[in-house]
Length: 452
Image (cartoon, rainbow, N blue to C red):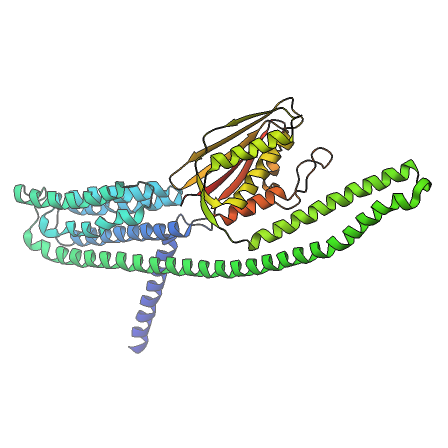
């Protein structure tokens, strides 16, 4: 007897394990490694709800078969299993939005028809209670405020059913005494369905919050490591540039003294070599100065104020026009809105972008530079467009890196740090910067600043 009892218990435990394993496998339909965490939670919820719907309809259908109900009643209940199968099939095909929308709308239709077909005493309308909140869980911003409308549908159906029960008889005539067992079972299943939905929602929400906390901790650790690495890099840059400055100054002094000391001994070829060495030394000196300024921008403190951008840019354009009378420049500047920024830093941004536009358009018969701005609710975006050499768009990710130049020094001289400094300044202001171009057809640079 003991062995027989034990074997029954083991068989029951094994069956329970297989059912749970199957449930969890079916719950993951439509989910892969690339599915976003929030969508994983939603798909778990819709798959579990579909499986529960199948189970409820199957249990009620088979039960009604043994309680003397008409065959049509049993068929209608078993037909309801299809309602739970279709969302699973849609999720399997990666049509997740369609599966969620179908489950909700088809569920409302079924919960409207079942009480009308059978009787109010069956309490099928009790399933509308969890249905009122499902639209908020199934959809995020995809359907906007329509999710409030879908939740309202459940309430409208409930109110309509109360009126319908008072005005009409059920479509199927079933012996009232046979209701008792099926209704009791249905009430239990309705409670179990609602409880399971709440449990799944709570469990998935807890997992989601836990995942967010884990990601936040990982991000915090990564940011700490990155900040430490950046600080170390800044110190290294600062140290190297300072150490390079002194010997470079000596080299430049010696190069200046060499022609005087050599006198007539120095040939024309030698003078050319000294001239090239001076050019290279001066270029290296400029690069070191630029690198120092770039390193120092990290430690600068923002002193933001409301700036008259129109006046600031107009003043810069006037200076550039006076400083290079030989270059024919056509300026087009639209009305620029005021911005909230550090005046010194944002002036450097405009200087870098405008000087680049002038430099890379210097080989055109007429340099054309257009400065614009447009606003959204949260930010202001400024842009500088030129008709110069442009750049290959496949290299635009390198534009704002140190010493990454898309043109040779002989074509257009420069240190290769200007745009990197500009990007850092815009980053300190909480904005974004990007560039766009077609090689040989000019370039456009944009930067955005948040509104106060």
